[in-house]
Structures are given as structure tokens and as C-alpha cells.
Image 1 (cartoon, one colour):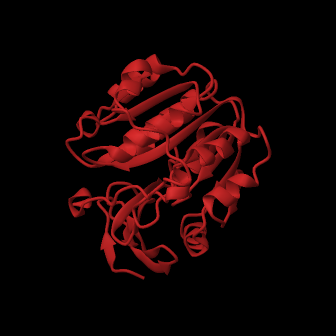
Image 2 (tube, rainbow, N blue to C red):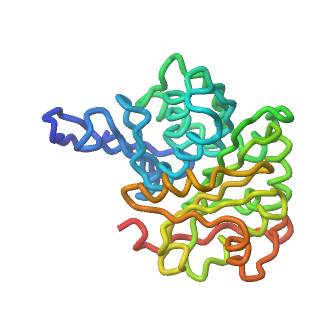
Length: 288
């Protein structure tokens, strides 16, 4: 157990520290919210969870993925969702809270991390969430054909997305698991000169008819390292509403779509299993 500290609400809370497969996991209490926690892995923030309000999303990229979840189907309608990468199960909790009776599969290979999260931050008992502790691509292969309305990829190993989750072959497996008209969303991280991000846009465009990207404008301009959410489908995307929601965030985001997005790839070619590499490591300044 970590050191006890006092929250601004006056309740004594204690951080929790445990070694997991991915490194040193820490659950740090949020001083502003009574039953909220931030998950860090080797000092890098991974997830934030508010047990009293699972619909509250603190991290910028998670709010952007929350917009995707809000727009993938009519409000409140249950969906079938696959989460590649679990963390503290923040987005699975969000789906369960905002779309009751949804059925979800989470693939998180770090079994000790899953155990820590389940013990310290238990899921609502009514949530229909199944967690598999296997590799993301292996777990995706077990999803029935056409089962998912939404596949979210948020997988990082040592703060980098593994190469085998960045290729056209991987997206072929995503497409197999998606229902007709289903959506694929990925949390990507890159910095100047945006080589990884451009390659991922080109890869998605090679497999899906519609592609959009949501990110902080400074990230899109290649001025700093940061996250971007890639969204893809074979059906038209609600770009106008996504743009409105991203612009109203505490940290406003910009949406790129269509020709302007494709032109931004700078001639990048789709990534294959043979050419794939891990996403770039973030600079130390990214978490300070």
C-alpha cells in the first residue's frame, strides 16, 4: 500500500501500489472526487475512474472516445462493444452507465492488472462485461463474425502501441468482428513528424470507406506529442456532431475528415504485418 493522504472532501484515502506484468501499477486517489482514482503504469497516467459517476471522463482522449460511444447508436440504446486494452475499464464502465444492457468484451493481457482493478475498483454487478486476459489480436480473433457494433483499440505496452495492432491485417480482423455499419475507434499517440499517425490514417483508409481523426490542433500540426482518436466505418460518420462535441471539450479538439485527412498523410502507405513497427515512445516531458 502507498502513503495515506487527505482529500479536499476530508476523507482519508490511500494510494495502492502493486507490481503487474506491465510494470509498477499505482492507483492514486483523486483529491477532488470522493471515490475517483487515477491508474498509472510505471509513472505514466493510463486511466481515471470515478466509481460514483462512471459517466465522468477525465482524460482528454477518453472524452473523445466517449463522444464516439455516444454517437455510435441512438442515445441509451444497448450496443455490443469490444475493448482492446482494458486499463481501469474506464470506457467499459462508461458504456455500461450510458447504455444499460450493453454487452461488452474487454481484452486485457495483463492478468495481474485486471485482478488489481477488479479488487480495488469493482465493476457494477449489473454490467455485462467479460474480460479476457490474452493478447489483443488473439482475443479479437475469438469475437464472432459480425458481432460488434463498436471496436475500440486502446493498447499500449510500455507507452507504445504494439506493431501487430497497427497493420492492414489487424484491421481485416477488426472488420470481420464488426457488424455491418459498425465503427472502429483507436487511441493513437505520436509526435513530430507524425510518421506513425500518417501511416495509421493511410492504413485505415485502405480498409474503411469513411475515416475521421480527432485531436488537439497542436498535435495535428506536429508541434507536440499527444493523443489522437481515429474513427473508421463503412457507413457515413456523424462528422458535424463529432466536430461540435470535440470543439466544446475543456481542451478543444479538431476533427479532420475526407479529402483533407487523406491529403494529410503526405503520401504515407498502408502498414502491413511485414512493415509494422511499434508506435514511438513518448518523450519524458509528455507526463510532466
